[in-house]
Image 1: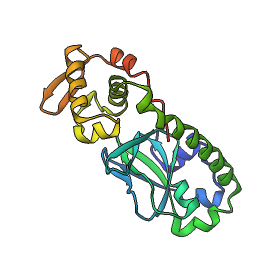
Image 2: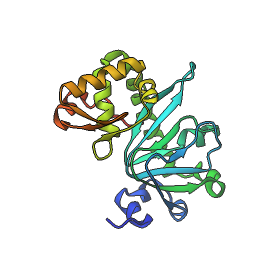
Image 3: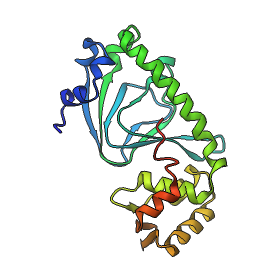
Image 4: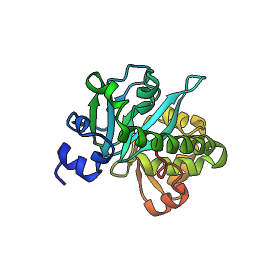
Length: 223
């Protein structure tokens, strides 16, 4: 597929979400893996539509830990809550692969977006879906063992089947201790699900079994 703004607008029928005056303002931007699309507690300058790739959202809990909130896949909108509430960015959004977004510069269109009937209808639908998924996300740590959570997380974030994330951060994100994470990684290696390449780096050895263990806990969840 041709990677142009016009091509993505057609693919996702954004003309049914935004009025023409806003369609004409959309800017295409490419992000590298681990780029931060939105920084928490900063002012929102662009409304983003994720049209290719995948990303994750996370937040800082009351005890200072980074907690996984959701995964994002096309078509996802980023910044709509902050736009509507006129507040700083709530959650950090990080690219898990090459990501392409279409973005609207709010300096040019913030007020007119509030009068865009198509956008407002889309916004209501998106916010309802995010509320439903937020309730589901909140129950995951209590409902599933660490093994299932880690397996699903690995399936969602690993690029080219390689896992080399910061282990302390991952343990916080999936709601377990660092020791529990290390024990699960060792267990997965013993079971042939992973193989350890070097310190802190693992490769998925059996995608089918790992996916079965993960039960798509995280992979099927969007924001």
